[in-house]
Length: 192
Ligand code: AMP
Image (cartoon, rainbow, N blue to C red):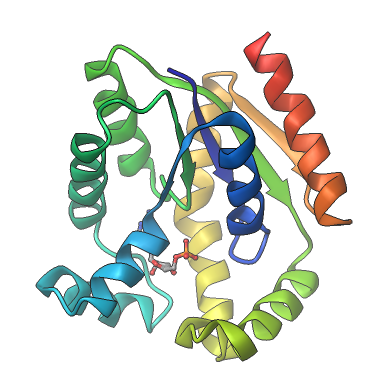
């Protein structure tokens, strides 16, 4: 298996680039944000619980998210690899992911981190909020809260994979095609 983490703050382009990467490399896309939004749309108990956190810009509890990822693995046992987008977001999630992958006798090949300045991120998110229907993209207070959570909790994920020598920064500003091409170059090197 070949497993990648696409890392970066809210609005850094993970969703856009994930769609292109899974099409090119035949990986299964695992976006915990998308899975949570689907649970909310389906009005499941998990969705109801998650919504209260998402609307405030807070993280959904680790055990909820890890359980969801575990179920996703069960559903996609034959996958040739996964592209993780928006997961892991805490040190505990990173440790849980490493363990779940070890059970499958595999691991993370690389963590590619999209680097984008905060002013550009706010601009992109407010713009996305006009059309995405995502309530967490329309309120600048909620957006700033998500950045604060990213710095306080999610930066530990970067440290976790830096220590393992798997972390690589990629410039996340420029055209979609230029960023995609930089990601592909990094992935092709890892695959070689
Ligand atoms: P995203 O679409 O990845 O930006 O996620 C939207 C929101 O869903 C986040 O602000 C969190 O509230 C929640 N969420 C998504 N992924 C996770 C995760 N791995 N851990 C905790 N909360 C998450």
